[in-house]
Length: 639
Image (tube, rainbow, N blue to C red; front, top):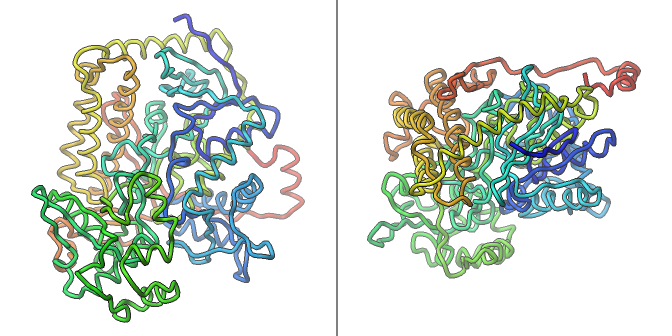
C-alpha cells in the first residue's frame, strides 16, 4: 500500500481526437493543471480507423444554401432519442471546433476562394459534410497531438484506468490505474476525470473497430453512472482482416459477392435471391452511400444486401468475400443502362462504364486499392473477406449539456458519451467528440470545487487498492483461459445481440453473463503476469454486455418493434419476399423517438435496471445580447 499518487486538477483518459482536444482546451484556460492517461498512445479508434472518404459533419460554411445553428440543431434533434440541449450545443460549437482543426493543420479542402465546400451525407439535408480523405480522424488526432506536445501537456502511457475514485458525496476525486509494464498501481488525485475512451468496441466478435481499441465503458458504469441509448448502434459491411468499412466506391464499382462453404465450394449467393440481376447490382451500388444497415431499407431498399450476407455467414456458416477481379453474375459486359438511374448516371460521370470491378476502382479511386495493399492485402488478385460488423455506438455514457455524468466531476466525451440519436448524420460523431470535449473543458475551467485533502484521499485510495489487490490475487495462476473467455463472450454477443436481435437468445446469454460475473474470480485464470490486464478487459466486456443486453431486452419488451440499425424479430411483423422468418419484423412508429432509455447497475452489481425518460426539450432561450454579455462576464454562462 506504499503508493505515490500524482495530483492534477483534471485527468483526461484517452489519446484520441476527443482526449487530446479536452486536455488542450483545459490547458488553454491557464488556471487548471491537466494530464492525459492512456493504455497506449497509438491505440484507439480515432487514430486507427477510417473509410472510403471519412466524413466530418459541420455547419455549412460554403455555397449559397442558407444554413444556421438552429437548423443544424433541429436536424440533429430530429434524429430521435436525442436531447435538445445537446443538439443545440453540437450545432452552436460546430464551426468553432471545425475551424480549430483546420487551423491545427487538418487539410479540409477549400475552393479557390476559401469556402469549405460540402456534400450530403446520410440523414443530412444540407450538404454539411466535408472530409480530409479516408483518414480524417487520424489526421485530427495527429494534429491535436502535435499541439499537446508543443504545450508540454504530460501524457502517461501504458496505464490502464481501472477505477474512478469517489468520495462519500458521490463525487469523482481521482483515478486508479494499472501500469501495464509491471502491474504496479498509479493513482491520480483530481477534481475532474474526463473519459475519452471511445465506444465499447470489445463486446462484439464481428467488428470493424480496430483491434487495438476495446473501450472502457464499465469504468463509468461501475462508478454508478448511467448509460443511455445502448440499443442504438451502427452496423455495416466491413472487411474483417484487415478491419475496414467497405463503403463508398468499394461498393459503387459493383464487386462480386461470393460465399464459400467448409468444403471450399463457391456460391454467388445474390443470384439465388434476385431474379433481376440488375436490381441486385443497383442495390449493391446504393450500399456505397447507404452503408449502415438501416431497418427502413429492408422491405424495399439496399439493406437487404446486409441480411443476405448475414444469412450466409451466420445461418449457413459460410465465409463471405468481395471479388473485384471479375464482374458479378459471369457478365462479360455489364449493360449499364439497365442499372438504376442513380447508379448509371454516377458511373457515367465517373467515366467508369467499362471493365471489371478492379478496373473501375482504379479509375474512380486508386487510393482505395492502395489502402488495402498497405495493410497486406492486394484486392487486384485476392478476395476480400467481409461480414456484417459493429462500427459505432450511438449510445454510451449519459451526460448533461456540459458532458458531465451523474457523478459530479466525471465527464465523458467522444464516442463513449451517449449523445447521438437513433439516425445520426454520417460524420456527426467527429463533430460531437470535439464539441463534447470543449464543453467539458469549459465547465471544468470554471468549477470551484477543491481537491480532496490528502488524508481523506489516502483512505479512499487504500480501500480501492485492497479491492484491486484481492481481484488480481484471485485471477492469478492456473491454466490461462482469459483469452478464450474473451473470444467466447464476443462471439455470443455478435450472434444474439448485434444487427439481428433474438430476444430468446439474448435472455439466455444475459443469464450466462450474470453467472460469469458472480463467479468471475473463480472461473477466470491468468497464467502469465504480463496478461493480467486481460482480466480487466474481460471484466469490462461482461459488464458492458450486461448493460447492453439489459437495454436490448427491455426495448424488445417495452417497444416491441424495430428502429435504426438493428432488427428485432417479430412473428407478427412484415417479411421481405424470399427472406427467412428470422428477418420478420415490425417497423417502430416513431413514438419511441421522444424517449431516452437509460440503464444502470443495481446495488448487487450482478444485474442492471432500466428507466425511460423524456428527451430534454429543444431549447429556445432569449438571446438579447446585453443580457448574454452580462452573464458571460460573470461566469461565462457556465452555470
